Amino acid sequence: MTAEEREKKQSSSSVDPLALINRIAAEEERVLSRTFVAPVVRGRQVSVQVEGIAYTMSVAEKDFEGWAILKSKNSREATVCGAPTLEQVKNYLQLLPCFRLILLEQFDQSFWSLFASGGDSRAQVSGPIPLYLVKNPSRFQTVCARFDGATFWYESADRRRDPAVARGLRDALQADISPDELHVRNAVPQEKVAYRMLWLRKNPHLTGSQVTPQSLLQRVEGALNHAGAQLDGMWNESPEQVAVRYVVDGHTHVSRIRPGDLSVVSAGICLSGLDQDFDLTSLVGVMRESGYADEY
Image 1 (spheres, rainbow, N blue to C red):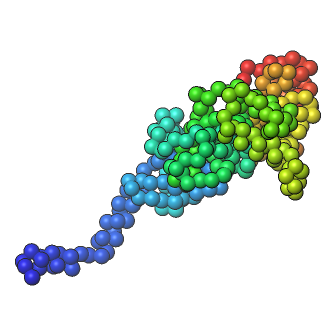
Image 2 (image 1 turned 90 degrees about the vertical axis):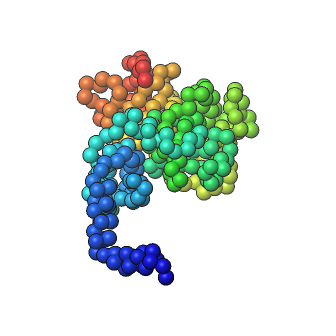
């Protein structure tokens, strides 16, 4: 054994395990004392990497959902300490690969979607894709999303895609036009696949599927249709409140309702404090009689 080898052996045998543990603990404490930006889904843990170390934490604010600046309480729990700027969110998302998705409809806390151009080898996913933290969604809308290896996060609407195509598909679904008779100008194959999926969901008896209790989306759409209005978009704002965007006589409105009984929380127009005296169906009648034109 050479002198150099003897020196290395002696050095390695003299390592103090307790000192090593303390050094690692001090480094972890330093890392966890920092704040970090992350997307939060209500009731789910967040996964973050700080200086190359991966952590999975629960969020102390159980009802919080959205983008947040988080601070670790310990290695297992974080707390919301602020809202990130748009630039901070942009910087986070730009680190992740981008995908174009076609929105289907909301299910629980996500909005189901399809790849806009068929499968993508960068993400081994088949079938509908849950997309989280979607802003002001509409069925058949094409959006840009980012994928962190486990979850797809909404980034923005795809401004390269003509919104008239999504509107045409929504109008056709409203009119219950069969996929085999669908003619929407400039609709691409994946948009037609999305249309067929939602049309079959609307007509389960044609597939032999068991008719299940109506979803919130179906209940909202039925209430609007009964009053002669058309659903244009819907999204959760909290467990007790849903925002509904709908069209009455060519004018677009946004109101907030309770998901349980579809009663109105905020009509979106001045009703002299009487908003909560209405449900969604009766509110449409008020919109029509008043001739109110929202500029949403």
